[in-house]
Image (spheres, rainbow over the protein chains, first blue to last red):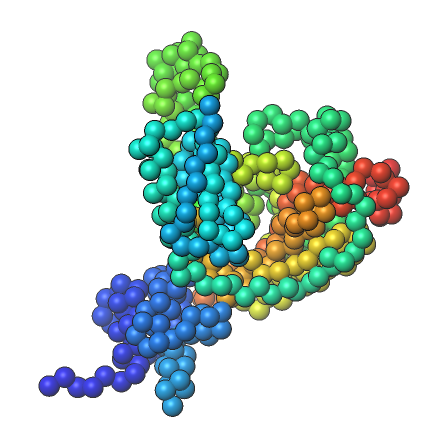
Length: 81
Length: 395
C-alpha cells in the first residue's frame, strides 16, 4: 500500500518533473539556484507546474517569493487553511 | 514591386506587448520590409519587399502566428513600477533632430544602422561621457579597456545564443588556404546582395562582435575566486546588436557605444550600489534638465525564451530603464539602465566569493548615441536653449 506523501514530498515531486532532474536531486531544503536547472527559465517552469498541481496563481509576488521548497510549502499550506 | 499582407493574429496582442512583438516580426522573414500592429492588437499588417507567391505568404503567416502564440498566449502582465518621474520638465524642440543632423552632415549613414558622427554629436557624446565618468569616480571604479570582439566559447557558457540569437553579429576571416585567399582576391566584389565571396571561404566563427560591455569583465574573472570579494569597474565600448528593419535613425543602431559602471560582489553590495548609482544619476540628470522617467523593464529576449524570462526579470525587478522623452513622437526611448543579474554570471562562470558562494553582478549602462539623440530631441539646436552645464562644457 502506498504511504501518503507529505506536502513537501509532493512539492519535491512536482519540481523534479518540472526541472527534469533525477530522484534525489531535490530535497526538503532545495532553493532557487541550487541546481543548474533551477535558473530563471527553470523557475518559470516550476511556477507553471505549481499552478497546475496546486492552483498557485502566477504573479510578480509569487514568482519572487516561491524560491525554495519550504517557501512553496508554507504558501500552499496558508492557502488551504 | 512591394506588397501588403494582412494577418489576424491567433491571440489578440495585449497593449503591453505590441512594441515587443512588432520588433520581433522584423526577424520572421527576409521579405518583410515593415510590420505594424493595430492599436487594438487584432490586426498585423506587413509590407513585403516584393510580391510573394500564395505559398510564401502562407509560410510567412504561419511563422507570424507562431511568434504571436509564443509571446502573447498566457503572457503575464508585468507590474511596471516607476521609480523616478521627471517627465514634467520643459522641452524646447518638437521635431525629429535627424532631419537637421542629416542635412548638416552631422550624421552620415555608412550602412543601415552604422553611423559616422560629426563634431557636434561627438562633443555632446563626450559631454555625457564626462557625466558618466563623474558617476564612476563616485565609486572609485577601476578603469578597464575591452576588445570589440567577444569569445563565442564564453558567450555559450552564459547561454547567450538561446536568449538573444536574433541580434548576434559575427566576426570571421578567410581560411588559411592560399587557393581560397587567391580566389577571394580575384573574385570578391560588392553586389546588390552584399559581398559575392563564397561562404566556404570563411573560417568557423570563434568570435562575435560584442553585444555588451560588462560580459568581458565577467569572462576575465571566470573560474576563480574574486580577489577581495568585491569589484567596481568602468569601461566604454562599441556594442553590436543587429535589429533588422528596426534599425532606424539614432534611436536604434547596429553599432553603438555603451559606458558601463559594473558591480561585482555579494548580493547586498551589488544591489546597494545599483541603487546608489540611480540616485547619483538623478542629480546629474537634474543639472542637465533631461526629461525622463525610470521604470522596471526587461531585456529583449528571443521569441522562444521571451514569456518566461520576461516574467522572471520583471518580477525580480532585475532591470530599471531610463526612458527619455522624445517630444516629436510623443514617446520615450531607453537611454540607459540599472541592471542586477543575481548570481547568474557567478554560477555560469564559476566566479566565487570568499565564502565559496557565487558572486552577484549588476551594472549601470548608458547608450551614448541614444542619450545625445534624446537630448537633441528635447533641446534642439539653438544652443541658447541648452542647459548652462552643457553650454559651459561644449564651448
